[in-house]
Image 1 (spheres, helix red, strand yellow):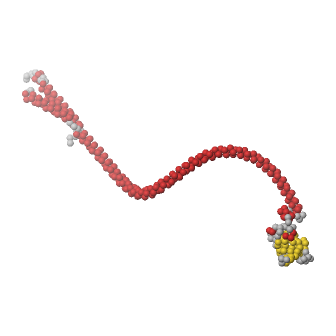
Image 2 (cartoon, helix red, strand yellow):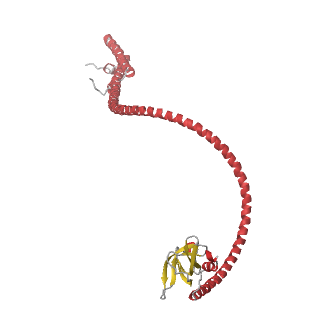
Image 3 (cartoon, one colour):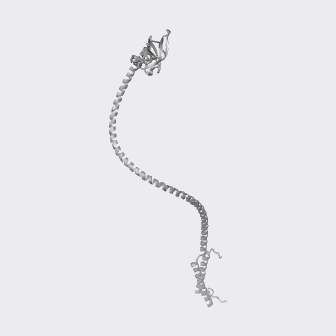
Length: 289
Length: 46
C-alpha cells in the first residue's frame, strides 16, 4: 500500500469515527421535537376544547345570570314594596307592643293579685278539704240514716197503700151515702150545711121580682142578695116596707130556695096581713139576730 | 509467466485492513444511530 493509501485509510478511519460520534451524539442528546409538537398540539386541542366548553358554560352562565338577575330584580322590587309594608306594620306593631306592654304591666299587677288570691284560695281549699273530710263522715252517717229512713218510708208506703184502699172504699161509701142523701132532698155540701146551721149573715136587700100563685098570693120573690153576700139555701129573711124613718111594716118571712152570685129566690113561708109583698120592698136578716 | 507467490496474491492483512474494518463498523454504527433518529420522526422529511 502506498503512503497515500495509508493516509487515506487513517483519514477514513478518523472521519468514520467522527461520523459515528456525531450520530451517537445526535441520537443520544437530541430532543424529539415531533413528539413535543404532537404533545403540544394535543394540549392546544384539549385547551381549545376546554375553551369552547368554558365559552358555552360562560354563555349558559350569562343567560342564567341574566335570568336570575331579572328574577332577583323583580324579587328586590317586591321585597322593597314588602319592606315598606313591613315598615308600616313595624310602626303599627311598635305601637301595639307599647300598648301590650302597658297591658302586660296591668295584667302583671292583676296576676300578682290573683296569685295572692290563689294562695288564699289554696289555704281556704285546704281548710275546705278538712271540712270536706268531716262532711264526708257526716255524709256517711246521713247515708246510713237515709237507708234507715228509706226502710221506714217503704213501711210507710205500704201503710199508705193499705190506708188508700181503706180511703177509696170509704169514698165509695161516702158517694153512695151522698147519693142517698141527695135523693132524700138534703144538702150534701158540708160547707153549705154548716152555713145553713149557722145564722144568716146580717145583710139588707130589695125585692126585685114577685110571683103569685093561683090564689093571687105571693109565693116566690127574687131578691138582690146572693151567695156573694153569704146567703145559702135555707136562710130565712124578713120582708119589710119602710115608710120614712119612723114607721115600717112587716110583710112576711121568706126562705131562700135558690141562690145565685147576686140573686136569690125565696119562698114565702109566713105571709103577713099588713100588706102584699111588692117589688122594691126591703129584705133583711137583721131582725132574726 | 512467473509464478506468483501466495503472499503476493493473497496479501496478509495488516493494521490498515483492521483500521478499514474499524471504519466500516463506525460507519455502520453511525448509520444505525441516524436510522434510529429518523425512525423517531417517522421517516418523514418535511
